[in-house]
Image (cartoon, rainbow, N blue to C red; front, side):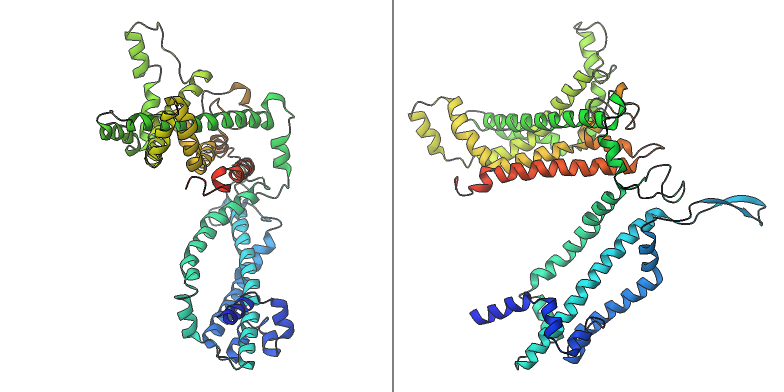
Length: 467
């Protein structure tokens, strides 16, 4: 058993260079002619698949790939132009290169080339493995053996193949595309086809973002202002929901409280209703002509309507408070399950030792909750950094910031980095390049915070402490 595992390990870790140098002529020729060694060793199905993939690659590169890759450095040479049409006897707009397609298909072609290089190495290693098996008198795997392996010891590869392909196509590739857009001048005036081609500009967009030239209207000043509010918002939105959610769960779970299921149901109803509907309704409630101002006026508590959404301080306080109303039910449900699992003996021992309810909460409940829910707390914080829905549906980022109207598509006092990014892509200017730059910065900030905090979590380092 030990020898077979060792052989398998050596086979899996086979070096391409070693296989190419030590292999026979058929193994070496498996590099330019995919699957040749497999054909020679009787592995016809493997050879057909490898050679077929190579043939498709050559056909694609000749017909499309060479063009896309050759155009990547320029992202297009000829944009839309007016040309005379003799049939209509007038000048018409004729469209030529498409920068967007060039960038997209060029990147896809580069990834395809990497896949072909990997397949080349695989072809050589497969041939060498089969060669060694024949020399040692071992059985060379056939097609049926490969199929059997895919539903047996390599079944994990079968299961993960489609999810990995989906992640590559719908997550990894868009991220790479977004990163590359940050190094172009892609915007409303240069959409790559209709309005004009876009081109590479290097790090100019990053210089624009982080340059303080321009005073209070510069991108950097606006970025720092919004970043500060984003961090404050994320902290308040996370910890208010967290603490209050735990307290609500404790109150409902407390002995002697009647109709526990009713109170939980009422709270959970805020989850059942689509969030954007609730947020838009609450937004209307706090308008100048909304329900809240109407009630206060009728009660005689105010003489004129309060402009809740037009006053920066009121607007920021309201989005935090309304987010508490939305977020408490989630945390309440999580906390309810965890509280039920805290050993009752701990509380009983604490009461015998004379601990009051606050001390029990401080030294038993909160440490246990923090240990178990620390990863949730971290993901909640990073989620609130990118909480687009609450801000967009309540305030739309407003009230407007007059100092920031020169850049950023009308930045408001409640805008987060994510809503600012969205605004940059709207309108005729549509600064996609700057939105991509900000997207990269958001990723760096959030990922850095996440990695630092996660590596310092007690639940990550001492998993068995509260077992």
